Image 1 (tube, rainbow, N blue to C red):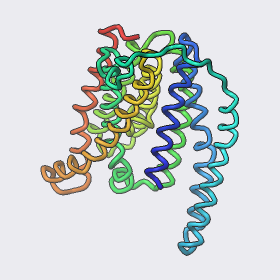
Image 2 (image 1 turned 90 degrees about the vertical axis):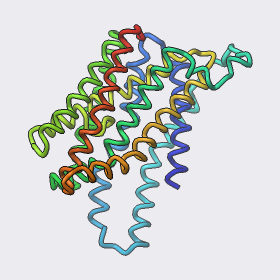
Image 3 (image 1 turned 135 degrees about the vertical axis):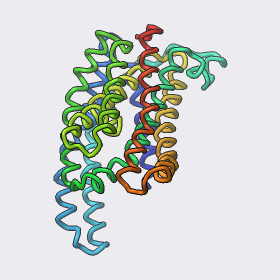
Length: 311
């Protein structure tokens, strides 16, 4: 059920990428995508804390009763989709006048295009780093820093509010200044946050900076805006002759990247555990130090957007 739900969510996201390209003017593309992503996050922000509180309040129930409560809450969150779908049905798009020939239908065209290939490499590595980052981050905060789950939920909600409220602003900045100027700042921020986190291990003062700059590279201000920018760039810079192939390639590299990161996480953890002193704290510190080269490469790739004038 979970994998099926994620699969259909991927189909829906791919469809939205195509719709954005068809109906949003190029000069305000990044701003509009930022607004869309902000609105997509609102239901989660509205219901996350009340639902977490409710589940904690009734966790003493036996399994059948608790699962019925959980199912009811899932159906409640699904209600947000009904008005969204009704509005989507009213959207009118002009039929495509392009009839690509057989060569232009090739699914490999996005990988052969110089600009789009760089986008695919960036999103794969970004999501790969995200998979590595998220695998043991909760373990660190619960077992090493000894924070409570409620504290983590509150931090997560605060970061989401900051990130999604900034997406329209960051989109407008990208429309004005281009990807080549903004991407290196965001990737450099993530790299700086990760280095500070590793150097100032278990220091409470570094956590706000780490949360804003890095976190799991997706929920932070820098990481989330970089993902939004790459997502928008994939839709904006894809050739309209192979837009379907571009959407598919982006989805493959994005989802494939996080899958590869999560898959590699246990192997990296086993390696750092073997070379450390056996303690969980040292193992995780070496683990995150091992992530630094990945984010250094991400920073280098964002510099290529400026050097190659990919705007």
